Length: 221
Image: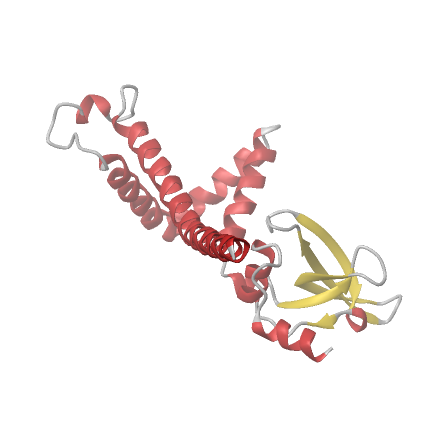
């Protein structure tokens, strides 16, 4: 009788522990992305603010001790500066200045390499996702028999082989900003019934977040 009571109590304790742990894990999964986002935004907020109103800030002699000396003024100044530069660059004169800047900096050793790389990154990130990636496909990678998800970034006609070759970017999980580039004949790719957003969620989560379309395909197989 005592053994049954002990087993029952033990079972209740295990259920309680399992319930508490699962709820804590659920809360952790929900809150961590939000907390990390907030921390990154706060870091950027105070870093930008310090550049303009810190002890060695660009505008600290004009701001410190005045009515403009409040947290966030650096961010406001940054937005105004970006807006004014955007107005300038949007015009014909601004485009000429931008072209001169690009030509001049690209000729300087090392500076030109860094400038060119950063310009390429910013232009790529500012472009809509649909412009960067045409469609989502599966290719045999890294060797036959293994399938990897890839994003088609372009295509060209191979005259020697008389077929269309796709330029496929194979992202690294969970950081899609790095990856490999593959040139695959169009006939060798498998179309994925996924849009770019769904595929990105799959990559970012390391396969934890599986789109419903992909689940359906797997279940059928």
